[in-house]
Image 1 (cartoon, helix red, strand yellow):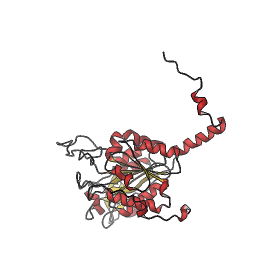
Image 2 (cartoon, one colour):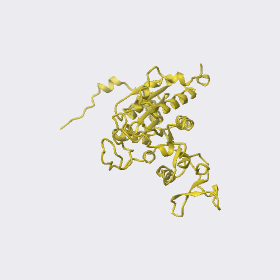
Image 3 (cartoon, one colour):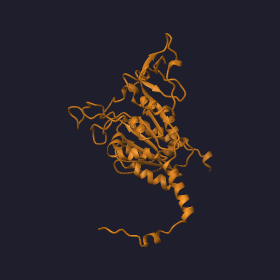
Image 4 (tube, rainbow, N blue to C red):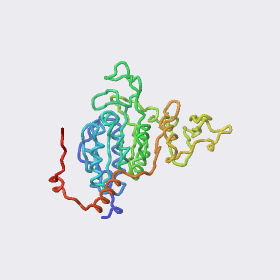
Length: 338
């Protein structure tokens, strides 16, 4: 059967392992969305590899009926790099959390994005260390009271999207665990991008940090606190779609109400390939002053690491031949240490 006629279902992508997350955890919704998206991409299961580090999110490979690696803390990008360089035909997905990726794995994740390896990153952000029972994480808000910060955290958190943009990620997006349709669309677009696709997913930890994203998850408040980004469309939001974002005279974003002479023509128009400063502005916006943007903030085309490596290997091989490992190991080359 060719890939074009391959038909899979969500059930085909679910493994036989019992899912062991706390009842009500946002991870269930993300797992379900990923299984549906993988099934719809028309790719055989053996062409997917899911790589994770350590944390609640990192149990993900056990529940996907694909190849997978449950690696060590923060090092999923390193393993994924080796996989993609040796098997560029595979669809490689890194599943990580705000602690795994941004604390011990911080150096790995920024260089993955800098190199623009053709892999997909799903960062589950619940603003807490859930697996180790509730310590503050690199994305916990200032003043957060936890078991490791009983008087309130004095650390300033990472802005995840700004970090990705600063590292040079060519695809940067955000979604929410319970936005099923939006999350699926975002993951499908991430897969279709050539380069490092970085998707921050707001994920609720109902045991140790319940309600961290209530403003954007609650049906009664989310319309007024979320900005749905669409390429080429004006920045409009609100329950009645009667508010928007425009620049002031000092190039600062401001919320305006449509009407009384203010129209959509006065608003900023989203451009995924727009100036970096504009995208960083979007990444900085958050409630209650501004709506939180979701969707694809940035998507640009750049050469990928894996393509560059294989092009270099082909060129050098053509120029110098295949080479001989035994000859290299038995060569007279040496280093003299004095």
